[in-house]
Length: 243
Image (cartoon, rainbow, N blue to C red; front, top):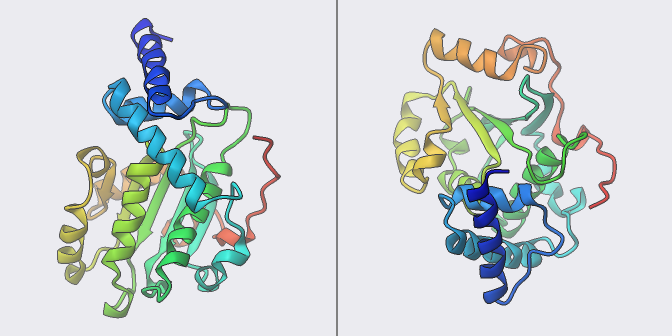
């Protein structure tokens, strides 16, 4: 570890204690994600970390959100979880044409946590917990006005920004129709510069090749030119984690 990073981590731990909390039980990879998200500013990183601890305690009191808590959202089978990309990132596919605005926003927020937690957990192999990223694919093919849900997109990205720092490797948006451009402009206003830089709207052959290369055809579902079968989120079984 670089000396500057080591100093920043020490200062961050002290700042967290000053805020009345503790970093006990959290390793350097986890704390470093918060530092990177706040441009290596220990005080800002500490504040973000403490807010995250409070949010997790309220949103996920049991440490995880079970399928039964988000059954309504799972029924549509709109989220697919593929195996790891060539860089070792799990690949999550969102089929927007299967999504309809939720009547229960509390359940929807829990669903976002459920899918992000499960996607990240699927990459736990021999690495230390706390350093995993994911690739997101938002497929807008065949969407109609009934599928448009700017609030859901804003919620998802804001959760990633505030509570899953440095978890997003890349997000590819496929098949964006013209009528969705204004929706995306609205959503973009809520995104930080660092998040926007990780989003690729695939519109031409060159960008499609980049998308294919980043994900890998062995992982990519057949409908996108890959060799893999689509696997619904709830059909992916993970071994219990010893945290």
